[in-house]
Amino acid sequence: MRSAVFVACMLLGTCAPAGAQVRIGTNLGTYPALVAVPGYPVYYAPRLGGNFFFYDGLFWVYARDSWYTSSWYDGPWDAVAPEGVPLFVLRVPVRYYRQPPAYFRGWDPEAPPHWGEHWGHDWAQGREGWDHWDRASAPAPAPLPTYQRAYSEERYPRGDQQLALRAQHYHYQPREAVVRLPSAHEAPLRIATNTAHPPESHQGQLPHPGSRVVEDPRATLNRQFPGAAGLLLALALLNGTGAVPPPATKQPEIH
Image (cartoon, rainbow, N blue to C red):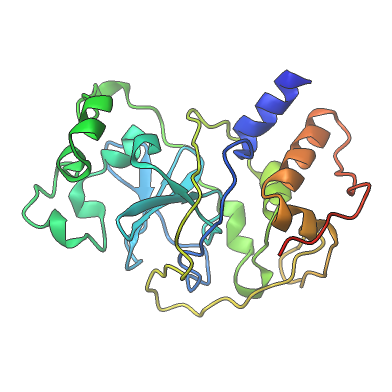
C-alpha cells in the first residue's frame, strides 16, 4: 500500500505540503504555442508576454520574483522555493524570458540568469555547479501535453477533472519530484496575451471538447483538502478500478 501511495504522489504531486494556490495567466484563454529552447529539454512560449516554460511534464512561470508550476497550462499554480526549481529550468538562457525582470539587465542573453547572485550565498552554496553540466548528456524533452488544446475558455477543467484528464491522456513519467509551497499571494498573476479571458467553469463531470461541465459534490473534497481527490484517483487507477469512490461522509465546511 505504501508503495502505491508513493507512486501516486510521484505521478500527481499530491504529497507535497498543501497550501493556497494562485491563479497565473487566467487570461491565456487557449493552449499556448510552445517552442523548444535549442540544446535544452525545455520549451518556452515566445508569443506570451511572460516567462512561461514547459519542462519534465510541468508548466513553469517566473513572475513576481517567484517560480510557479502547474500540470495544466492555465493553472491553478503552486509556488516552488528557489531550492526546489529543477536545474534545467534555471539554466534556460536570459533571452528566452519574454518579460525579464529589471535585474536581468546587462546579463549575457545566451547564459542563464545569475541566480546565485540574486538568491544569495546560501542558495549558491546549496546548488553549487548548477550552471555547469555536460550538454551532451542533457535528457530529451518531455512530450508536450497537446491534449490540453481541446480544453479552453469555458471548457477549461478544474480540480480533480484536471487530474483525471491527465491520467487518461498523458502517460509521461517525470524524472524530478517537485515540492510545492504555500503561497502568500492572493491577487491573480497575469500573463498578457491577445486571447480572451476564460470565464470560471463549475467543477463537475469529466468535460469533453465542446461540452459544459456540471456541479459535482466531490469538488468540495478537493477544495477543502487539496490533492485528496487526485490521490484517490491515482490509487484507483493503480488498483485497476479506473474510478474514484465518492467520500463516505460529507466533509465539514471550513471557514
